[in-house]
Image 1: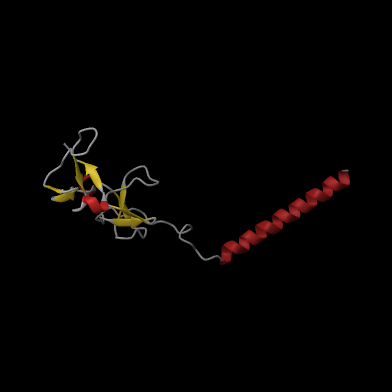
Image 2 (image 1 turned 45 degrees about the vertical axis):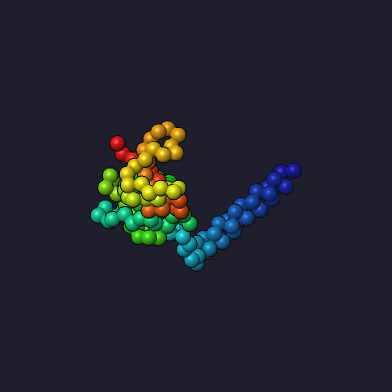
Amino acid sequence: MALYVGLLLVWACWHLSAASHLLFLEEDVSIPTVESMNYFPEVKDGKCFFPFYYKNQVFYDCIKFKAKHKWCSLNDTYEGYWKYCSEEDLAKCVFPFWYRRMIYWECTDDSDGFGKKWCSLTQDYNKEKVWKYCDL
C-alpha cells in the first residue's frame, strides 16, 4: 500500500511541475487580449464624451460600473481613457424634448408614479428613452 501512495505522490508532483512549465511557456508567447490589458489611469483634466459606448451599451450619463464612484469615457467608444465625474460632468437635461405626443420645455412630472419631475437626456424621449430626475 505504501508503494502505491509513494508512486501516486511522485506522479502528482511530476504532473504539477509539467503543468506549471506549460503555463510558464504559454504566458511568454501569449498575445494580450482585451481582458488582460492594463487600464490607463484617470485623466483628471479630460472632458466627458456623451453618449459613449462601453461593453456593447450606450451611456448618456456617468456610470458606476465596477467602481466606487461615477465615471465617464473621454472618447465615443471607451478605449481606456476615463475620469471620475464631477457635478459639471453629469448629464444635462435637453430642452425641448419630445415625450409621447407633446413637446416639453421644462422638467415634467408627467407619468412619474412618485410625482417627481424628470427630463429627457435626448431630444426624442420616445426613441432613446433616456432620462433623469431633475435637480430641485
